[in-house]
Image (cartoon, rainbow, N blue to C red; front, side):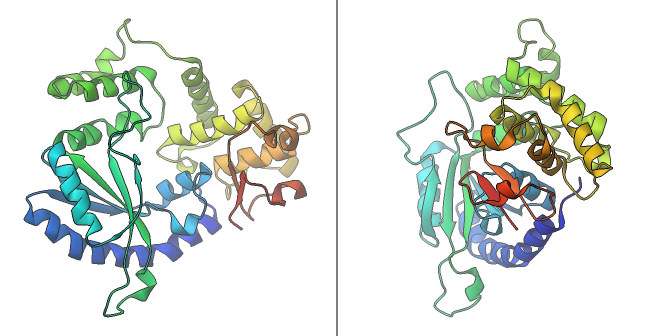
Length: 322
């Protein structure tokens, strides 16, 4: 996937600082976790994942992405979750948490969506004054039980990282979450179960995203696409929906933009080119439709995009990273 220089530069600028933070957290937190016979793992967000998340428009400051560095603590049962949280907060400052309260949930009883505890904490200034550039940097700590962790690892690719979208496979994954004792069997048979008449169905949104994925694969070569095409397609779908546009118009809109500039640019991601194409589409009326009060979608723009002047005017749902 082609990632514009500005995003690559932000990632490269952030990476050394977060690598230093990771080294410090791994040295401080990991031994304390493992002393209790709990499991600890950590990671720094890769460039492609970083770029895709920025393009969702849900990152107010890309240079301070709250999960650029993240770690996971795995405990035996739910009883130890609060103990692990207290351990984390004994060495780092609390910024926020999701869900906000243990006894309140946004889920209806029939929902089994991801709701593991995520703490967002900040590194405290050290008495020694060492590495002051790390002071107050926010990072994510997920705290899970062994079964929650096993479920998330086993079903991660079914739900989050994919080059397609499948209503039945996602449905299966959450059925497994509701009955973990059958997880091994259910996950191993997931693909076959997805083809059975009882579950082989899709809603309108899934159908539209599948069509969009097909269009994307026909327009761009694999080397210019991310591994997670599903997320790319969902982000583009949200932009199209904000303009009341049918996904069937996607190929024509991209083709019109290719004719306008004379080529399919190699220096723009598919998302960036889509926003650029919509902004220049004569019959799209992008400005009027996007700025309607009920629209909630945020779009990302940057200096490598060829855009009309109106889009650079400050707006709460336009994220300009320069």
